[in-house]
Structures are given as structure tokens and as C-alpha cells.
Image 1 (cartoon, rainbow, N blue to C red):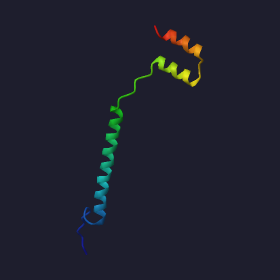
Image 2 (cartoon, rainbow, N blue to C red; image 1 turned 180 degrees about the vertical axis):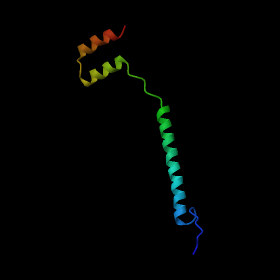
Image 3 (cartoon, helix red, strand yellow; image 1 turned 90 degrees about the vertical axis):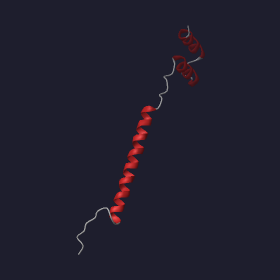
Image 4 (cartoon, rainbow, N blue to C red; image 1 turned 60 degrees about the vertical axis):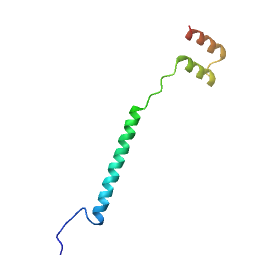
Length: 75
């Protein structure tokens, strides 16, 4: 009878070691992804004129309304 217990040797121990490396690799990738999300440059907000042009392009306002609003936006 062999009473020598070595948990990191043999089939089960090797699998645990590989699992540990995979776990830490996934954690590292997740941390890098999260950091990149916070460090990514944000898109500047649209100007009022850009929003007006989009509304006109979608057909929400007609040409007369577009021109009238545009006059009030531009000095």
C-alpha cells in the first residue's frame, strides 16, 4: 500500500495544473479587455446641425423647416 500522496503528480494533478493556467489566462484576457474599454476614446457628441441634417435626411422635417431651424442655429 502506497501512502505517499502527491496531488500535483499524475493524471489528476496535471489536469489541475493546466486548468489553473487556463483560468489565469482567461482572467488576464478579461482584465486587458476591460482596461481597453475604459481607455478607448469616446466619440464626441453630435452637433445640433448634424442632428438637424439627420432629421431632414430621415424625412422627419421638410425643407422649409430645415432651412428655418438652420438659420437659428447658424449665426
